[in-house]
Image 1 (tube, helix red, strand yellow):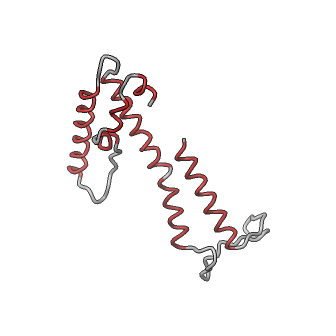
Image 2: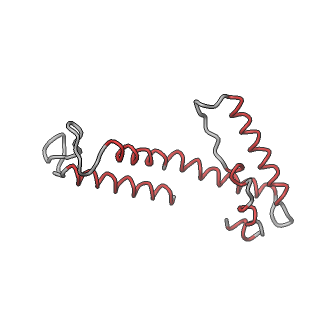
Image 3: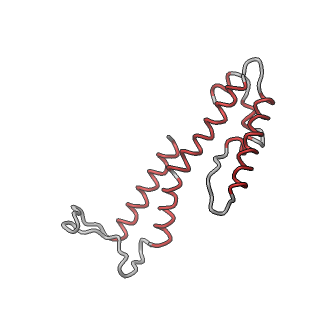
Length: 143
């Protein structure tokens, strides 16, 4: 951000093509290899166009390239580290309820059982798990 700001390049962040240029291209069982290759080629073409469009005497194509891939690296980090937490929160909410305990699915813990040193009701443990996952999600987002 600072590099772009100091060199008059912040406008690039508002270009509609920025999303394509910084998107992480992930393997997907629903996509064919040729489809993934086409996405990669499209991304590379958009990156080249943005570098041409926004380079100046104060902002080189290489600097733009590094900025774009830095944004993509951040997205990749979030996909690898925050999305699994989002999934776990989703599973917790889908399969458990703080006030409705299905037989065999209590989250309650009891001191002395299975190494537990604390005793918590199902509701308290559900809320603890949800709060812990939410906190970790925010930490991952802000890294």
